[in-house]
Length: 124
Image (tube, rainbow, N blue to C red; front, side):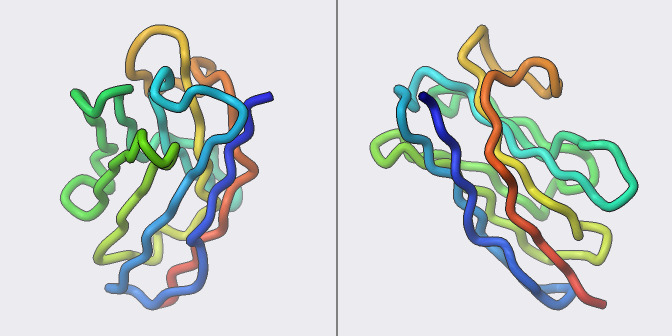
């Protein structure tokens, strides 16, 4: 069974940085395109960033472009999200997701597996 586990969330002041990690077990990581989604209290889950299987393509939501960087290390079955210059509106539960069908996708219903999330709280 494919399992995704996020780590790296926590409490940080506005302007600070965090790096999230997502590690896959039970599957061949390099066959999955990977995504980060987030969901704030009272809001719908939204795409944050996505990365293709071989890192040939990356996507960023407009709200995080220039501040966040998605990357992956296929040798270690891990995806990362480097978050810099954090803002209060970045506060959310961040979810790792994996897609084996096709290429890069930013759609909720295009994901095959989900992690349980990690909480990021940005204080202002």
